[in-house]
Length: 424
Ligand code: ARG
Image (cartoon, rainbow, N blue to C red; front, side):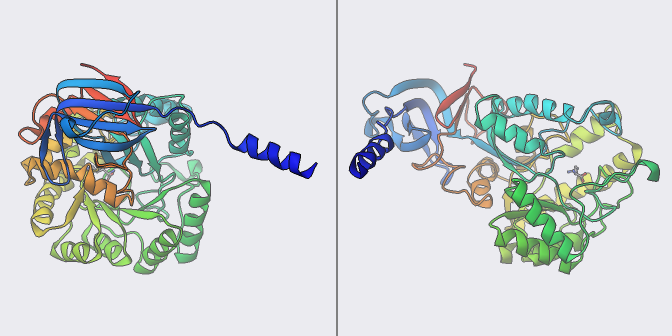
């Protein structure tokens, strides 16, 4: 009796393995983003979502039964990674315009934004701040196959001080509502980190300084003390999460770096001390240096109040100059665009800015691939075409090492070994 039950259990558990799903992609060229080497006539084999082989087709056979995809004439790169997006925000809803819509409208917009983001070749994004757990809803929708979109690393709510950049300050007292990410003092901040982790945050985003798009904050002003940032970072790291600090002003940047944050977002007024601190701690800068062009050109039309446009004029050029200085000083960089502040799907416009302000095309591409993979703590999963990584591949016409603007037009997108877009 006992044995029969045991046998039945064993049989039930020993499900017959489904035949492996294998895709073998060939193309004209493949860019090894780690070294900058270009491999002619490559083949990449993806089995059950992971790359199992990549190299010259002549020495990289396609396994029997593999589906073939020949991307003749195109160059293959790893799926791109944007370390700073807000999928449920739209730049055209400046000022108070978002208040005309029910809250869930933001998540609905997110569905459209997730689609254009992956079609632009961004197969992984870090969503660093959203309301109502929109980022989790999008992630669930994508992972369960309801909607197309990138792999999302969600922060859920951004954490910040009362009245700071991550709070909502523009309404009269009668309309005051409690922002779920607000926490003051080390203990409250620690419990906020724990709460967001429990809800599903995989990275912690917090506001170390004022910002451009908040009311009543000065971009340069620090908004958490050293003790507060220390507590936040220690707690997040203890729970296995990386920390992204929104920081424009110098003292906020340097305090966040001393606390041990993993990425500095914006980094507009970073100075020589910031560069040294970042190099010592291994922190990455994520500088959204394309945005200024869009904000100054379209902001007023989008309903952005003059208060915010004035702050943008304070930040824009300085941020670009400091990007150049930071890069020259050897600070490690990742690709973060703040898409949501400008239209989703245009993420790749930033590559040309990175080159204009001092990077080689390869370095610019590395910010959105290998570097981002490392900064996410997922270097074995994303940002490279070497075996073991997720089968996230993009294909472009032209030579991205000669002209990064070819990345604005992605012919083919493959995620987890599945073809998401084929616009050849
Ligand atoms: N979310 C950022 C803020 O409000 C956007 C800054 C955009 N401007 C720029 N020059 N990068 O502070």
